[in-house]
Each structure stands twice: as structure tokens, then as C-alpha cells.
Image (tube, rainbow, N blue to C red; front, side, top):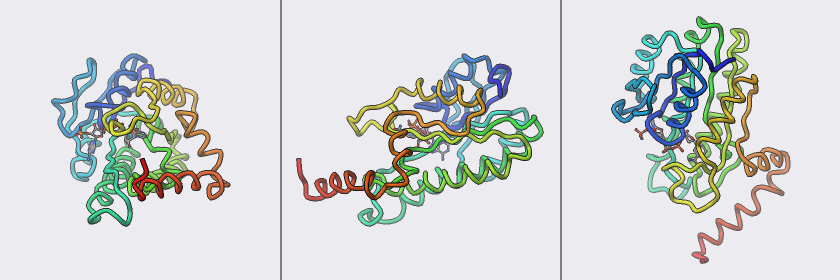
Length: 245
Ligand SMILES: NC(=O)c1ccc[n+]([C@@H]2O[C@H](COP(=O)([O-])OP(=O)(O)OC[C@H]3O[C@@H](n4cnc5c(N)ncnc54)[C@H](OP(=O)(O)O)[C@@H]3O)[C@@H](O)[C@H]2O)c1
């Protein structure tokens, strides 16, 4: 689909990658860009129309879908990362919040907007996933589980909406230079670079974006994950548990 003259809605458009998505859509000539955020006053990108939306609130999701009936491109960007292990976290609060937001929130948006997209000719859904959809790392274990669930859901939504001509794009990325990745000194992609790749893919009709080298390598190694992916993760985690410098 063409971004030019499309009508887009981006969740979590107030900061980080969501803001970069909204800016890129405006610069590519989208007719209208709705910037959804829990605090709409924080959506300050020029040319973006603020919309109040918490994606974990099903009633509000339904209201926004009823209000924004002209949307042809839905960008499910909003997400949360609590850096929580499976067995060491004090309780399930972080795991539940990540699943509620990254999986159920994104699923609610897909469900609410599927008929809107159908009415507007099919359009596209972009789901912001992660390299951690592909493998588990104890540093962000429950986040990875929520992104793996969202990856599975994205593949299913693509199958289910094929008949109505909706392109469903899965975006996987390693670290991106936003608040979410502020804790790490690992190499980070620029949000603008991810946004450009994603909308190039939408315009080219591609169903998957592997945004960086690390992500491309992990996806390529999936069939041998226990030989290639997990041993270095295990080594790193064991060293961290031992308190190695
Ligand atoms: N940064 C990375 O390294 C990285 C890598 C791979 C994938 N991702 C994914 O990229 C997406 C964007 O993350 P980011 O890096 O831009 O992180 P960020 O700077 O922490 O921004 C997260 C955004 O999601 C919003 N959000 C969180 N929960 C929400 C909810 N219940 N309803 C509506 N909005 C909600 C936040 O709104 P508030 O301002 O109200 O909190 C904020 O706008 C996420 O899905 C993330 O998992 C990030």
C-alpha cells in the first residue's frame, strides 16, 4: 500500500519509536496521522492528531476504532518492558503487565480495527515485536514471552485477514535507542532507521522486517537455536548470577 494519502494510527506515539513512526508517516505524505497515547497532551509531533488511548482498556479501544473509521494503516507500537526473570521476579505483576500490554493490548487493537481496515480497502497492520520473540533471555524473560505470543498472534491475524486484503507486517528488532533500552550500553539502532525500514516494507508489501544484523542472525539460526543461540546466552547469564564483572 502507499503511505501517501493513507490514514494512519500509531499507538504510543508520544515518545520513542512511536514518535519516529508518526514523524515518518507525516513526511511520507499520509493524509492524516492519529497519534494515540495514554496522555494525548504528550503527542507533540507536528501534523499528528492526538488521541487518548490506553491499549489495555478494551472499552477505550472500541471507542477509538468507532471514532477513527478512516484508518487504513494501524501501527501497533505501544509496549512495555519490565526486565523481569521468570523465577526470580518477586511476583507475576511484571509478567502480567507485559502480557496485558504487548499481547492482549495489541490483539485488542487488531480485533477492533480489522473491520475498519476492511471497509477502507484492506490496508495494513504493523505489529512491533522484538528479536526476543525468537528466543528467551533471562534479563527480559517475561517480556520475551509476551513478544513471542504477539509474534504468534501476528502470524495468525495475517492468515485470518488475508481474505480482506490486509497486509500484516511483523517487525523484529534488537536494541533501539529509546527510553526502553536506556539501561544497556549495547549497540542500538536509531528509531528513524527502524521507521524507514518499516514503511518501505509496507509500501513493498513485505510481511516481515528484521531491522538489524543481530535480529537477522538470530532468525537465521532458529532451526539450530540450542547449538547457536542459547549457549552464549547461558554463559552470560551464569556469569551474571555468579556476579562476575
Ligand atoms: N527500544 C528497544 O530496544 C526495542 C527493541 C525491540 C522492540 N521494541 C518495541 O518497540 C515498541 C516501542 O518501544 P520504545 O522503544 O519506543 O519504548 P518506550 O520509549 O518505552 O515507549 C513505549 C511507548 O509505549 C507506550 N505504552 C506503554 N504501555 C501503553 C499502554 N497500555 N497503552 C498505550 N500506550 C502504552 C508508552 O506510553 P507512556 O509514555 O504513556 O508510557 C510509550 O509511548 C515497543 O513495542 C517495544 O517493545 C523496542
